Length: 125
Image (cartoon, rainbow, N blue to C red; front, side, top):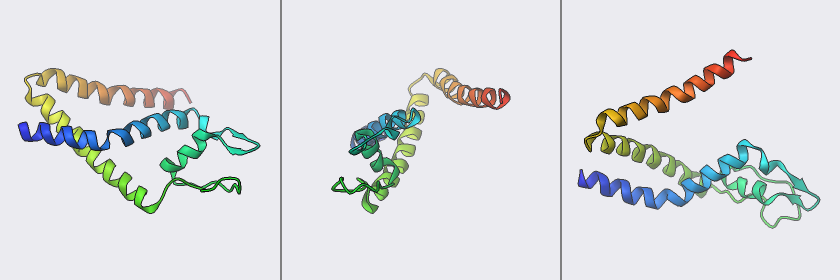
């Protein structure tokens, strides 16, 4: 268990900055705050979104058209795999700390709420 905690801790700390960035950029992309453009070109949020999306702008005023690269794509793939792994580690640790019933109820709620919201959206169309 100590090894699992250490692995979860260090992998989580290694990827926490990028995971936070992806979470925050996901918020502004959901609300399309990155779509706003001015006469000078894309908004700063749009420009920062190129890290996440890999899409480039066609704007001669920008020194770099995208902040992404092949190396960044592979880092994101690695981050995603490690994120999945640390989520599984977190679930295992939650179940092994003696709060198994609470952890399982939270997992079920974490499945039921988004499924319910999707079904509600489908039914309302």
